[in-house]
Amino acid sequence: MKDKKKLSVSPWSELLTEQRNPASADIDERPTLDILRVINEEDKKVAHAVEAVLEAVAEAVDLVTAAFRRGGRLFYVGAGTSGRLGVLDASECPPTYGADPEMVQGIIAGGHEALVRSLGKEEDFPERGAQALRDRHVSARDVVVGIAASGVTPYVRGALAEARGLGAGTVFFTCNPSAAEAVEADVKIVPVVGPEVVTGSTRMKAGTATKLVLNMITTASMIRAGKVYGNLMVDLTPTCLKLEDRATRILSTLAEISGDEARRTLDEARWNLKAALVMRKRGVGYEEAMERLKQADGVVKKAIED
Image (tube, rainbow, N blue to C red; front, side, top):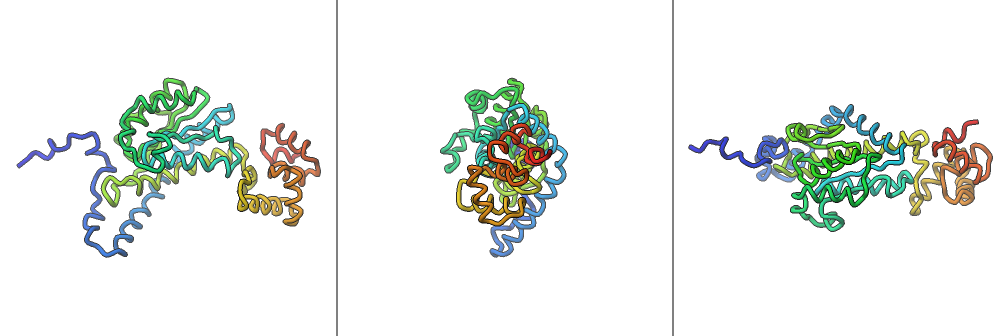
């Protein structure tokens, strides 16, 4: 009989995300509805896993907020699903919060082509992850979040090592506690979601946990940066009819004016919602509203105060 321990020779074989899930061992023999129930039951575990690491997420948010205040940037670095989720989160910050596209950036192993087509081999080169940061002139002002569900992705580890060498803030996200121990970072976020329904398919529970955490990091950081009023996105960029309508409704609600009046004010404010809100709340023109926002570091509530 073969010694089972001798069969476990790869760096992935002992990872939690590579283990078989007993709840789905016979999933290939189940009817469709049962397959979906198994997936759904496993997905329910993700939110609790994220809840358990909220303190670490808060540390990451504070690190990113501090970087933004000193003019720094946030970089997500990942491969495959992890990389795509980082690029997705970064790409949604400009329209949602009026953020400069340079403020939050997503880097994926393999570049743009890897967003729509799997380029698995690209993740095997740590030096390419490091070079990606040098290409973007990452410095000590910035924060780099390495995303690796497995925790052993060379591209991500190379990027994090480079970030530390440059003096940048570092955050490591993984769903494998054992892998996290071997990585140096200022903050480690390690939600333990357990084995996947389909063994090793980390686009499932690990991917869901990644999306939840990245949403938290940018949303909370943007809130801390003053880009919301209450729970309304007053710094949005109205790049389409839907967002123009949302801007109109937000101004109408906060300024207690009609939709038509809100739209006229937005026209006067060059569709800068924050300026329009200051104009209505303080009874000032566009130029003074912009000056008030400048003096208040872009925070609307401060700009409205006497």
